Length: 176
Image (tube, rainbow, N blue to C red; front, side, top):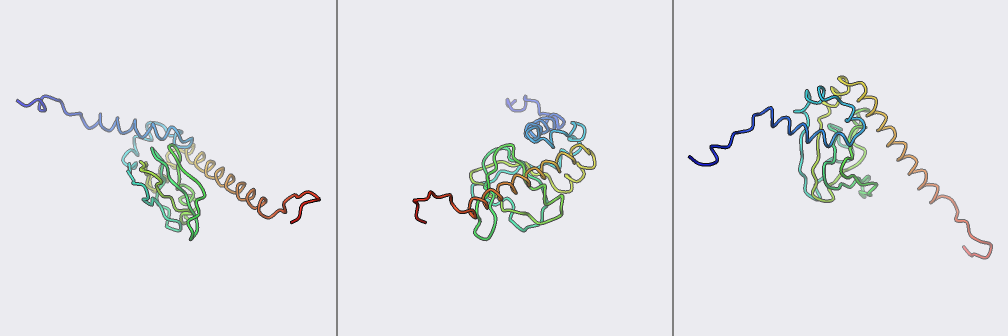
């Protein structure tokens, strides 16, 4: 009798438990998703998909319809906007993106590309909406976080604008 036939197969519930623990490890990094109870999360376990992406792979394109929320499990991603693909930010382990378009039913605001080989956790938009219904606390926290990120982006834009549009303070003996 071969050795491999003596090893017991893991039951499906145990596999589901391991998968839930992996997902929980990532979701605990996010203040809104960490608000979900184990009971609610277990109901939506099948809605979470793990994606392995290579460097250079585009995860979402600017102006595409919003359809999912993503969490960065490992790796690094770039966030770019405009026809010239100006890099406006980076995402790393624990960062999430994609929720704003779902809230407002608007197209993606930016393109997100893997800078290096990365692993993502994807949650379908319908599942996010169902999670919001199942957990009002989750819905409120997700909205607050998206609003905070928008305010930070606005503050950064205003700071950049003030640096570029204000005349430089030059001394009296400086030509310019």
